[in-house]
Image 1: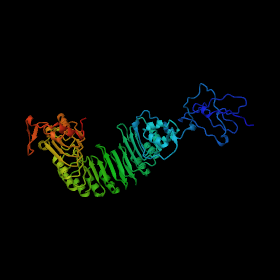
Image 2: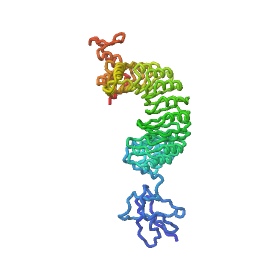
Image 3: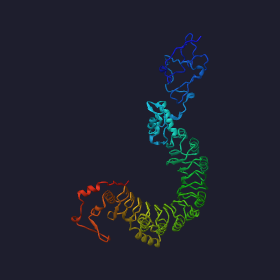
Image 4: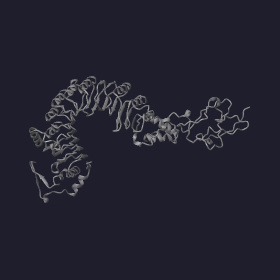
Length: 592
């Protein structure tokens, strides 16, 4: 005979507060299970009597076809020692268990989620909102807010999971106290991730690379930057295995590579490679036929024993599609330049060889004879002179747009003026620390010979009183930082928007003239106080009133300035001032 079971309304049952340990009172004629309350007939109870901790916020039960008609009975009273409301069971964990990552200690800006994939048209509504509307709302939340939104309800949790799964770019700051599990738990949420940027404040090792390789099978771009306290312990063999396994990897940028020791990179997809803080590499093997850009910065340690000539020779021979080359090392020499020019890379457009004091005008001649279509040339820290600048101007007048010659002590203001006059496409020029004041260098006169004293005196006359006059219609950025030997500057550059005059201590207000109407920022840290006021008045004023500011007037031939009586100084009218204020762009004077 079928026994009638009492009916319990679903709305009156609280599953989250259900006490599975509490046995319902035994009544005469009741054949219910003492653990779950279901009828014992044809029922196999799967509920364990010992609760375990879990991270699920709710418990759901799916009945089998054999007991689909069974009801659920809830007790009318609970014991005082029942488990808390949020205690869960491990065998009922939800699939998205990593939604409970604790990020409360970190700021919302530590993670940035970039998602450009649209949501599919779905009629399902969640919380009164269509799925498409909820998608657009949640995709604008920071990742910490997205994790919190996933706890609201099932619809929000599913939408959040879809957002994470569709994410293509992730930028993450890993705090010092975080472990590899922190990164792995976040990466598991983004199986479609193709661009990853990690700011490491903790140490990096092979375990981190293995975690990234496992969690991001379709990774295309990876960037790892390290803080001052973090140590990159990745070796060259581990990096080579990672690059070989990631068949889709196209961009790799990594800082703090001081422990590589040597590496061999073999990849048919890698197109961009940036490695910094390299030191004493025993081998460097490149087998990347599609590599287009490479940047290698070596540490400035005296014990660096890297053979740059062999490295450059193998690089240009095995990577024929190189377009951009950047190498920064104090061991750069003319032999390295000859090795780079031997392969004659047809597509090379940017060449940067920084801190090579042994690079001379002969190196410039080799570069000019091999690569005639360069758009950027950076020889900062070299020993080239004005003759080398002349060769650059003769070969690259129709292509060169960026020229960087910082820390080149052998060039003068005449060479800089010649470059700006002969390179009409020039948009950026850096001549920082090239025109220096000899008095700023500490010399021991007792140990110097008479010849050295005489040459120092001649250099003082030659360098101390240099003037720079630049008139260029396309120049946008000019850097003269540290040019303490510059005492006069005249700029007529209508497109100039950024000017760096940091530590130009010998510039005086009466020898400065800036005719740059589009100037947006001027860096003037370390300049004289009067200079800062003059710069501010010139860049925020107009050229018509500049001559009357100090009651001086330049003579007709421009050779000298004569003082005028105050009564002859023409003051602009109010109407003129109003017209000049219209459309005037405010310029920022950066002193600190």
